[in-house]
Amino acid sequence: MQIAPELLEQVIAHAREEAPNECCGVLAVELGPPVRAVRVYRAVNTAASPLRFEIDGREVLRLIEQIEGEGLELGAIYHSHTRTPPYPSQTDINFAAHWPGVEWLIVGLTDRESPTVRSYLIDDGQVGEVVI
Image (cartoon, rainbow, N blue to C red; front, side, top):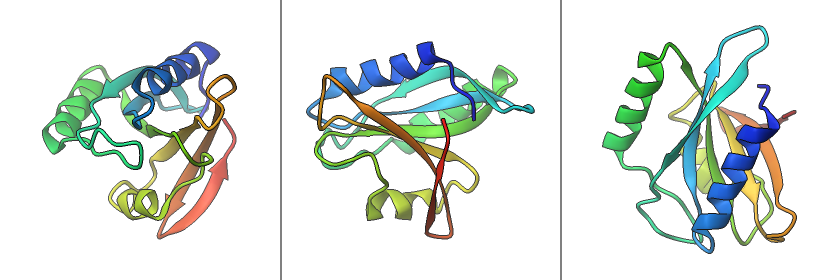
């Protein structure tokens, strides 16, 4: 997935605003080639936790309906890790089982001045990094 620097900055800004808790949201894409992110949709972390995120199921459905109503597709779910590097936790891997083909964009905030962003495809418990 290609993502413009401006959209990546929106995700990073969201992560910084929610710290010390994890943030979460989704990215909408236009199918390509290439697949290109075109919009960031913030979500509420109902867990309000620095260790995990949860998105209310009704909010997920609303976001997907909005994305599809705009002629776009769900391309990525994003969240932040405020205490660990931006690599999928076992909780992330378990959650990804419900979202095949969707990228997982993670913002690492262990250094808030220089966040690290990584993206992954998680398929059948296997994690593969995707170039942003």
